[in-house]
Image (cartoon, rainbow, N blue to C red):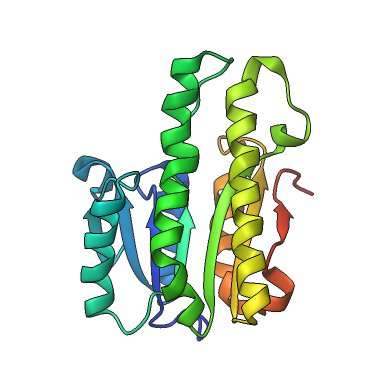
Length: 214
């Protein structure tokens, strides 16, 4: 068990996906109290976590009610790992709306609600998964890279706020290629679990490239 994670409350959003399941398992093995959050109960079955919650993270009222109940039970909320996924290519307006709700709105709503909790923690951490395609955008994925880039900017704004207030919290963006590549999910899980073993000064605002394997 890692002393850095022992007893900490870590919220994993999008816990029912392949990446989310691996991250939950790694955090649980390290001693964290993992709160696995998803939009459907069936997606959370057999997730390795202390508790699960079905929450529409794009709904501010639903998120506020869930967060109030959680903070009433836990001594602190120490992490939010936003792994909510979704993929549609191209530039169609309907696809943009579909992606925006998953990629950006859920991040904005959840991180705004938990921002003060994470700032009050002795080691608050929030992390997202972005894409290497943001650095080389193509028309065939215009919607996707635009929203991923917007999510990265949201994280930088979070980082700036905590830096200005000199709080021991950090906002981190992991850049991945494709999670179906060999070893990619394991790399992501290890990187997430390591967030509480590194000082916030080093992490806050960091863009961590996991897209290349040695």
